[in-house]
Length: 379
Image (cartoon, rainbow, N blue to C red; front, side):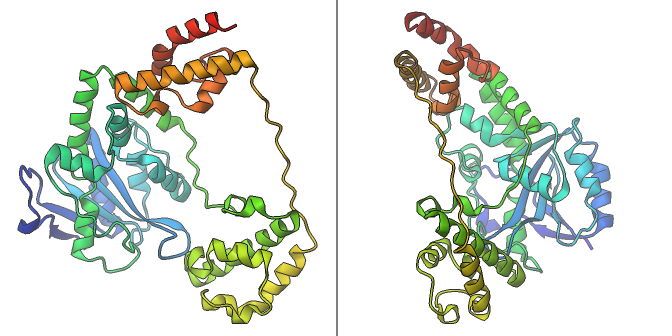
């Protein structure tokens, strides 16, 4: 069944609010196929996702996909629709531009869950960064350009709950209804500043990037690197056991037992896991398993191979210092974040390889003359 809701109440109306007043909630395969037959004729679509991301339940997965063209808005319930192939076809259609804001996580989730690699992407966050915006949040940009205040009430909502409330659906659709218009005004400003070419190159790289979603790993937990080799082995076993139990009870791993506690119990294991407090009951119910894993881990070691850090020569260090000074100065002149011009890793690669090959084309144009000067003066 297709449900239609008022998008914004009179109390929520803001000055200069020029928008459609309806969106459509899609929760069947037939409905999705029907709207996709229409959407495949569009030139551009605003896209956003609402996901569960280890906040209320175990794991990360898509709950809703919001879609807007210039006249209609849709909220697709991914937990109810079982055949998303028509939508995947649209996302991968290079003839339709997909407008995201902060596409990084969305791209990883789409690839991880549906093996979907969207083509022809415009990321309004990328454009905002290249324009030198200090606050690049979607809500701030919508308020800046359209004088509309975005509701923040449901930023940490449980998007797996059903039925979804009208207020939650209003919030979800609000992330895409402005994206096409926002893209248009950002492109206009990019052209005025002569930076549209920068954005186009960056956006093409987004499309080519290998988007992989990975959960946190045991060896990235704060405090792990300070553990002894035997303690590292114990921690890995406890970490893996916690993961299995969290999946069993469908709770985020930090709800079962947080990382700080797990590190602490690795160093000083409880005498009786069945009496541990401040943890999920599943821990106490499986006290014996934790004791077994500690015993196994105590017979193992995880050694971390120390990487040899190659020091730069005095001349290379001087070149790097000059590049960093140039980076800061140019960033101030262009009024953009300095890492956009070139980050520390790129600068090190330049002085080591004596080449600008690691830079994007627009970065090279900004840097090449200064690099020629630096490399000529400091041999």
